[in-house]
Length: 228
Image (tube, rainbow, N blue to C red; front, side):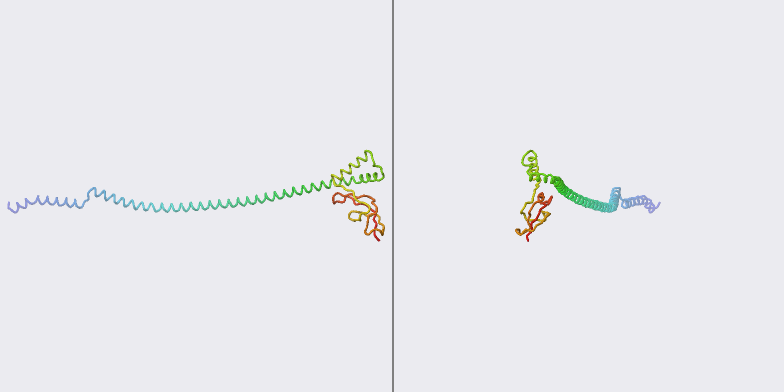
């Protein structure tokens, strides 16, 4: 074997070993370690998570905004309904107060009219009774004029009747000789001419008159002397 071949044979295994070492170094440089792969994966996952979170947060914000707007609409609607009900109730209350006021006014007017009517009915009833007694009073006056009521129980009763009618019911007998004739209070049945009088004057009472306060129940029937 020549020296050259011997060198070649000796260098072959060494070269092969060097080549394997170079390949391993290249693989070591190219292939990342497991720690590097985990870090890279975590970074990728974080990046992907942030992107997904942003994508998820955006619809959530939009939904929250829509919900707030909906709640505001609902609140506005409820407020409007509440205000409308309040206005309606205030209107009903005002109408009720007006009706109550009118009712009170009507009742007050009714009470006033009832009192006035009761007073008028009482006065009318009393006047009717007194007018019915006028003929009795005429008989008493005639009997007294003829001297038939000078004394005795009947004279006392007649006097008491006249006194009660005068004090409690303001009944007054009127008409006297010498008074001026008043056509609103006297009824002239006879008339004479008398040069001694200056105005129409009552000369004789034919039937006395009766009045109650200012109301004439019966005019006095008289004979009148007229001036020339």
